[in-house]
Structure formats: structure tokens, C-alpha cells
Length: 317
Ligand code: CP
Image 1 (cartoon, rainbow, N blue to C red):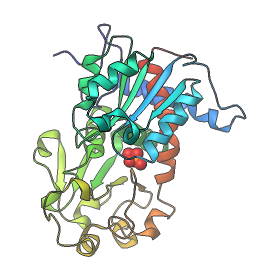
Image 2 (cartoon, rainbow, N blue to C red; image 1 turned 120 degrees about the vertical axis):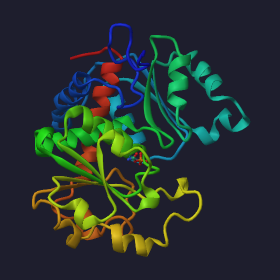
Image 3 (cartoon, helix red, strand yellow; image 1 turned 90 degrees about the vertical axis):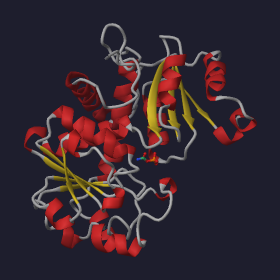
Image 4 (cartoon, rainbow, N blue to C red; image 1 turned 60 degrees about the vertical axis):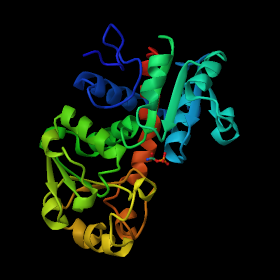
């Protein structure tokens, strides 16, 4: 079946999901990102790879990390960056998503970075645009958050080197998490030894076992001897009805405390895509502790997003 992310030469032209991306493309993105990391230490933090190109950030949902790091990444690639203020745009007057895209295309957009509450919105845009325009998914509904998945892979590779020996636990609201899906697909393709999901039954989607994931409802069993712990935010805005008794009860059973962290390997790293609910899914002593690499994830996100935009645009060093 045709992969809508690849052009007819098999090259990445849109980034819509980590699902279905070959290992060599994932590795190429991580390797390219690695070349951009040292740029942050330079006085002039810019390369001319996207000079003359226009990147439009279209965030129909709120964001701190993703939107800002896409903007920094595009500026470091020397692109012109336009952040559409969705609340002040004509979308609020009923203009359709594709009409908005057509109008921005008439303003010579080259790359659209899109976050949308509707799963599939970036796919719709990718089908609509001309072949020289590229779409990068910055999070669509519950479906996918591929650059978060990639920066998570970058972080894991940075600290643990080799995926083939690793046991990775993803903990929390997996049911509503686009990050969990993107991480599971990327970890599987990159050859992680074991992927675990730990959550109450009400926050576990069906089909995880078919994806090769071991499912646990108990933190002591699920965290035993893991190398990497990816904590997830409780996505209250996506929950319909009461799926949990209370935040306090959730923290008691699934909140990552120092005591629960001790079930993992002593050198396990703790990750979280943010934003964090301290005292709900993670205790501050862990979030700010020496095993946490949460701010490293944010920092690596700049280089990973530089890599993605330069690769889809066909620009290389
Ligand atoms: N991780 C993440 O997507 O964070 P933001 O919602 O702040 O972009």
C-alpha cells in the first residue's frame, strides 16, 4: 500500500506518523538530529538549509514545547516562520481547514506544521497540497505525535545507546495518548527488546498485545528491571465520563514516586513528554531527580525538528 509520507522515490516528503516508517528513515532522522545538536553551543546558531523557505505553524490546539521548538528549529534552519494565531484567524468565522491551507499556499508556504484536535487532519492536508509542499504532524487527536516519538527515541539512544537490550515501560493514560502510539511504533521499528504498557484497565486501549506490547496493571510488576520509563499525562480533556476514581487514588497506584522508581534498574531514565501534572502522574522528587531526562527531551526536540524539516524539504548539509 502507498505510504502517504513517502514520495515515489521512497523519500520522506511529509512526516505524519512513526507508523510504517522504515528503520533507515527513522535512523537517518536521529543521525541528522545529532549533527544539529552542537549548533546550540555556537554563537551563531544558524545554518542556511531552509533559507528562503516559509514555515507556517498552525496550532489548532494549545502547545508550549512543540510549537516553540518548531519555531526555534525553523529559525535555526534560516526559514521565515509564520505562527498563525488560530483564535484570531478566519477559522473562527467558519473557514474550512483546506480553504485556510489553500490561502496560505497562495502566500508561498513551503512547510505546514500542524497540530489539530481531529485525528487525521494532517493527512487530509498532505493529500490536498501540491507535491512541493510538506506537512509535518505536530499532534493529531489521539492518533500520532511523530516528532515527540522521534525526540523520545533520540533521548533514549543518547542515554542508552542500543535499543536491542532495552526494556521500556510506558505508564499512564495510554488510551488517549498519541505519544504512546508514536513511541510504540518507533520503538518496535528500532528493535527495542521489550515494550511494556502499565495503566489501570480503564486507560488501556485494545490491541496492545497485537502490537507486541506486554500489558501490566501493577506498577511493581510492570516496572521491574526496566531501563526506560516514559510517564504520560492524564489527558482529562479527552476523557468522556469518569475513568478514574480521583487524582489522589491514581497517584497512589500509578504516580511515579521514588519508592516505585526503585523497582526499575538503578540507572533507569525517567521521561515525560510534558506538560506534567506533578503529584498526579509523577512526584516532584522524581521529576526533578537525577534520573529524570525530561528537560533533555525538550532540548533534543529542537535538533530533531530541524532534522525533520530539513529532510522533508530535501535540504541536506
Ligand atoms: N509534549 C508536547 O506535545 O507538549 P506541548 O503540548 O506543550 O507541545
